[in-house]
Each structure stands twice: as C-alpha cells, then as structure tokens.
Picture 1 (cartoon, rainbow, N blue to C red):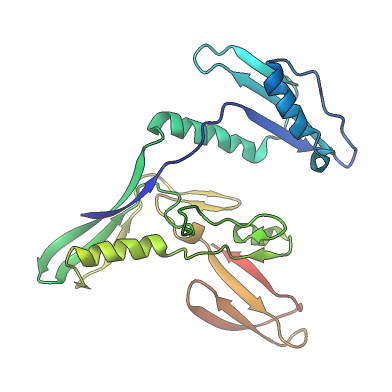
Picture 2: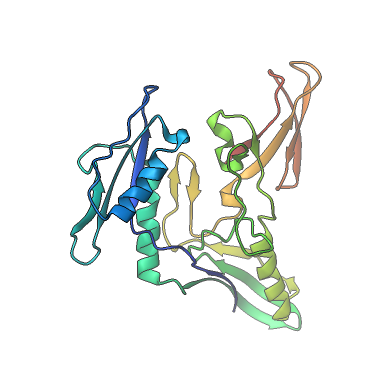
Length: 259
C-alpha cells in the first residue's frame, strides 16, 4: 500500500459573522453590540469599511462548553448566511480531528506482482481529502483565484473573467503514481480503480462533492470564437487534453465548467 497525505491545517474559528447585501439601500451598521470591547470594536471596524456600506451584520459568539453568549450583534435578526455556514463545518472538523490530523489516500495492489508487473488492479481509495485535486503551490498553499479575477469554479455564474488557478490539478495523482513506481510497479495488467464508497457523492449547484476529486471534479474548457458569429470556434479542454470544433452563435471567449 502507498498513499498521499495532506495535513489538516485550519485556524480555529471562534466567531461566525454573517452579512447580507442591503438591496441597493445604504445600511447603517448596527452598533448595539454586546460583549468585550476589544472584540466588538474590532468587528465594528470591519463592518464600517467602505466595501461593506450596503451590508447588514450580525453575529453570536458562544462559549463552546457552557453555551453562554459571550458577544452578539443583532442576534435575533434573520440573515441569508450563505457560505459563512461553511465555518461551522470547518470548525467542527478541526475540533473532531485536531490540527495534526493527516488525510491519507491509499493505493492498494489487488493481484499478484511478478517483477515490476502487477497482474491485477490498482485501487485508489477515496478518503475524503478535499485538497487532493486542488492546485498545490511550491510553498504548500493551494491556489485559488479571487476578485478581480474569477475562479474557474464560478465560470457558469454569468460573471466575466473566469480563469484557471495557477498550478497543476494532477499533482496529487502524480505523487501517487511516483509512489507506486517506487514500490516496484511500473506495469499493470488490469485496471486502475477508484473506490468512492466512503460516502454518497453530493451534488449541489456549484458542483459535485465526492470521496475523491480531481480539479474540483471540473473540466476547464476554453472557447475561442471565430472571426464572425456562426463561424467555426476552437474549443480546448485545458486540463483534459481534448479538443473539439463547434459553431458559435456569439462572439465571446470564456472558460466554462462542465461537470
């Protein structure tokens, strides 16, 4: 057995804040926050930044052991919390696994090895490492595009400027392949199998979450229009090694997402 490892290095989140856009009407920050002055003043400074002038804010900070409210602002107001809800999942995972937990993605030999040849299958067992198919940078961080550029995972939202993040989404697979080679297997008379039975894949509007994924389970396709509407276009799978030719009804280029 060989495997790919990823450390769980996530900061502990002590407070969860939510903001919603104010429907085009400038909102006034709710300054009636209760709690330690150092905390409420620091949060108020963020809320009053020019970029948030049309936002409303609310938060509740609880003692994890007793449930006592330590600080709050607008605690009974209703918000569309959106992606801030992810902080609950991240904080829960950190609490359950600990900061030193290592996700391991193993590869098993199923069959008989003769020399450098495996007569059987190689089985990659998906273990829930959601950084496995992302783009690792030389410093160990993961690449993600943010405004003014738009990350490729949002290419189908209708906003312009979607680009591929820097880095190689196949790097984790390459590491596993190198480990298999180091274990003495360079030929496989069989299949390479992905075991994704850890949990049932979950589909949501932004894509698919599964026990193993590569490039966020997306294929980036770059469309270059022809000289005129209706003319031939060039469609290139930028990380899938595919190329097709299509006809375009609009003169526009983009990277689009295909699941």
